[in-house]
Length: 165
Length: 165
DNA sequence: TATTGTTATACTCTATAACTATA
DNA sequence: TATAGTTATAGAGTATAACAATA
Image (cartoon, rainbow over all chains, first blue to last red; front, side, top):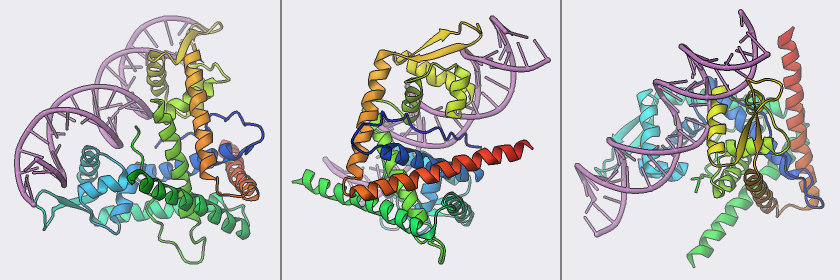
């Protein structure tokens, strides 16, 4: 039931010379994928952040603190997020064995089923989106996207080191 | 100041056979672009939805109703959105000349400056993201992204017609 | 003292429902 | 009656600040 809009970003003034269309195309594609995820999540009464929470918990039992780092959220935000998920029976809090201040957050069977369904639905929808592309183009797109993402990750790694000096 | 996370989506179980990596790569790229926009918006104390609002108003003076359709929001949500933007002096409401129930929403000079800055910042950041790609790859990426977006738009057009029958 | 986490508070964003004014 | 918009209300999601418990 999430209200989605496919309205693209404010059309960039399409600067002459540079990359005509690249910025717009990337922005629109991102919105499309993002909205698709929101829609799938909504079908399971989840938000994107809840899907991300459950996704992290699929193979980890982090503390609230670690969860905050993973999600880029303040600890108080994590408290609320986990509260709401726990209230729905999707996650559990367990006192840490090594630090009695800390909780370890784990996913329940119900939560796992839900996130698995959502992930499957998302995959299916993305497959539909790229249905028109021949295999070569899909591989190309995968590589280009991966290159941008990893380049950015590297850049951030380097930036951090630079800051640390 | 928007807290951003580059944490990718819950890694899809990488189904054998199909499109190994495509779903993940697209999801991560989308998050990256989306987070970039959120960050740029945040630098101007704007949210993504506020940027989209101002972006629409750059070349239109729609009614509240039309705005709701553009943004995919309920009219009550638009009321609040425009309220907050107007309170900051970014937009104006003017009673419609043809329908005294309706308002026409327009962007102020302040609002225009703000959205122009945000758009420029966003463009610059995206340029940085793709800085490592040769021209050929950029064009390829633009075409692939555009093809997916337009194919989806067409599909929705067809779906709508199908529903209407 | 420092860290982990919760709670109180505040604000944005969103929706539903009830309402007013105009068509 | 139907439509345009606002307001009241509720809830998710986010942050900051103050706090308790543990390290």
